[in-house]
Length: 430
Ligand SMILES: Cc1ncc(COP(=O)(O)O)c(C=O)c1O
Image 1 (cartoon, rainbow, N blue to C red):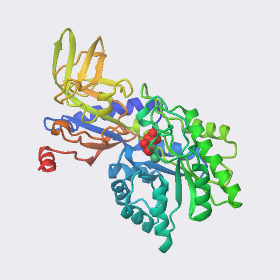
Image 2: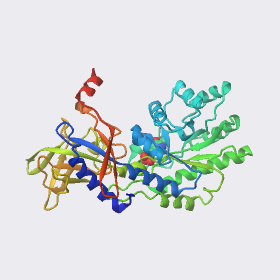
Image 3: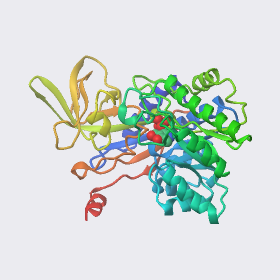
Image 4: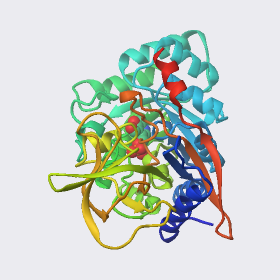
């Protein structure tokens, strides 16, 4: 079954019920993540069809580095944007070809640079010191890798500072408007013919589309200026990063078509100016395609506040717990048979298992009164949640299952990761 905004909700309900019926949730597995495989493929296809055919779409692996999920994305035609040496190896293990991978780590060792270049993996240079390291490689070696400059267009922050990367003092890339930097970039391009890409990523989550467009415009203008100054089209690629916002308040799929149309409106030549485009979306591709489910173990009341103690907490919803104003997620209540609970709603705190009082994944949320044995479903957890596990209290990673729904509405699960058990965690700390 194809995923549309309408089917998204019904897929989640079917998967939830099937997970209970097929005994995926039980005493020693009181929390799981369910990933909608067809949903990922459909989202990838929506992205590809929104842009010209020769655009390369590289999934930002940081959003969800599970190998089996990467394989689904690869099947959906995606490449991989990797921001650490380990993410690079994961992408290779998921069988992405070198030409499908972009290496963007902000801190790369010489060994890591050399490995990427020897494999022919594209690399975006973060700073002028890194440029020297790459130049040392090219003094004695060659590589089919496309080499880019990551620029910081210094156009400001979105609503969340910590995920905005184009601020005046951002740690990422070369600060484009700092005195002398623009000329230094042009001079480096003149000196090193192997630089052929301008890369930027404005930020994630809460960056308005206009801010993303301003960033791409700055990159495009720089590329044009470099080529004009060199008298030849040395810059042939624009890597425009990710950052498309996702609406976490209801089942709305990200609109890649609208984004591509807005790009074209901002830069009418962007799709036919001869630059090959690369995108690096993470959240927009995967956020809507997973749910996290946890059993309610106990319920209580304190100072007239209803509290449900569940197995989903800071270990998997870390940002939601620490910055609830920015990372609020929808929560639904299900009975022990996996059926949506309806009826009178009461304000409840949905608490996690960690031993600190801030471990609340939803504050005073209106839901049918939860009981022990019920389940809570947290929506839209595909990006940056179970991929950035937080091991406080030695809480184990959640198991991850992919699912597909056939024409008869039967749900078939595939284990993507068994998560961790107590022995695994003890091993980590031993
Ligand atoms: C360089 C780069 N590209 C792409 C992304 C993906 O961003 P998003 O998941 O918001 O699309 C990030 C996120 O931090 C990034 O740093």
